[in-house]
Image 1: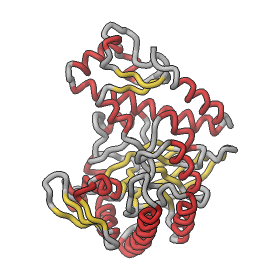
Image 2 (image 1 turned 90 degrees about the vertical axis):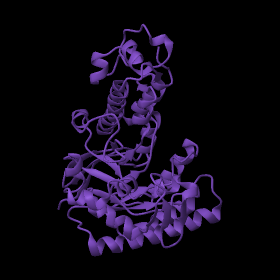
Image 3 (image 1 turned 45 degrees about the horizontal axis):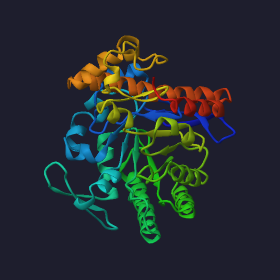
Length: 375
């Protein structure tokens, strides 16, 4: 089989060490996926991503649908060929992006009518249409369309969105059964349910009945406290089969990643490492370092003295500060390279800790070190 997920070891906390085999390569889990919204991880090349050890990246259906268009990408050989990325790709369905449009969208049971943020043109995205686009893009892992809502939200709105997401999941499964190729693409359903524990569990149970090969947990990391994110993740994960991969969408901060892993999450993504890099915020083993601060103007040390990334092996804080305050493009490139290495290295060390039964110690040391703050 082209797709196969295996759990190699479990931790008493619920963390899992595994491997997800896909047509474009194997993903060691737990895995962090750099976000390449428009077919590009901002500030870094595909070659550099490979050198950092990124095994899978995420691309966005909404943005690629609007530009350059899924039919053009299909004609150019699919997303892997188009962006020259030989390893696995995951595409989200566009549900979160449509949610973020706010005043530019209208949601009904049939789907979402929205106006493009590029030129104001009107488009309609249904579960079937989203799958049509994702099939054309050709990513290894694709998502069913879901309705993502804000938190906090009232109970009625939350129940309505969860029910609609479940209906869209059924329609997505049926469309993929008729038009998709399970040998080359793996369709995940998405658990919704806001911050209502029983609704999260019920939504997960009913999603499992639809027999997706993998599951995502959505609608979190939208402003709610970390404790709520963890609680809702745990509620959903408890109902998902242990034999299938679990993806928590849109998380998280470095200090929070072990918390999600301990709740049985196998995959996650987040824009923080790349977005913060472009804004001059570097993640280090002693917390966040704001490189624009004047205190670093004469600092000859690397950004993180315990980091083995190409940036820390070669460049000083003083030079990186100079690049950033001068508006040099290289600042974003080097900052991004460092931050993505930092995230991928955390996940590598988490996998190592699970393998040796040492995750609790690693989690405690990571959080303690990050709270120290850079010198």
